[in-house]
Image 1 (cartoon, rainbow, N blue to C red):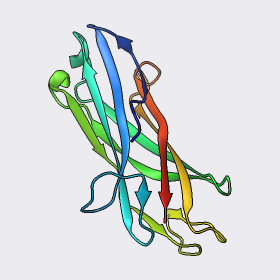
Image 2: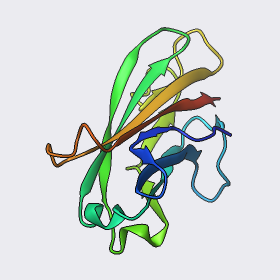
Image 3: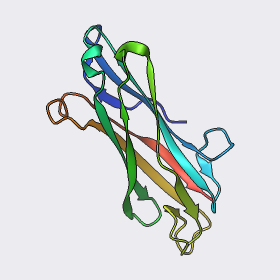
Image 4: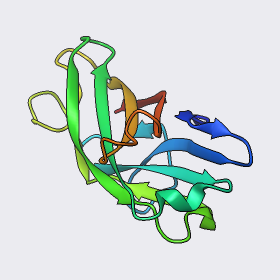
Length: 153
């Protein structure tokens, strides 16, 4: 499974924003990188806020977006993401984000993760990023993860 993403700020003891992972989840199954066609999946990620100034982020909203590249065809698509709000106290630990539900399917299905024509499976690279809705802190507190590749079969 993928590892941590990249995030800022990273000032130990003062303010640290982290993005731990992005995972693909099929209903009723543990996270996986091999996903069944004709079903659904969600993407989940864990964020963290720590440090003496972490409380300053309480109540801030972060928008999460997913950009998908089909590795067989090079096609890029953007998936509707979601958002999370930093809870009080911000130093409480891990903030879990779960995406909307996305579909998987065979060629011609119109699914979010559609196997391309002529292929037995589709391979997709998913870049996920989170940025503050508040423009004042947007360039200061942000994160991305570019380590998730899934195969739909």
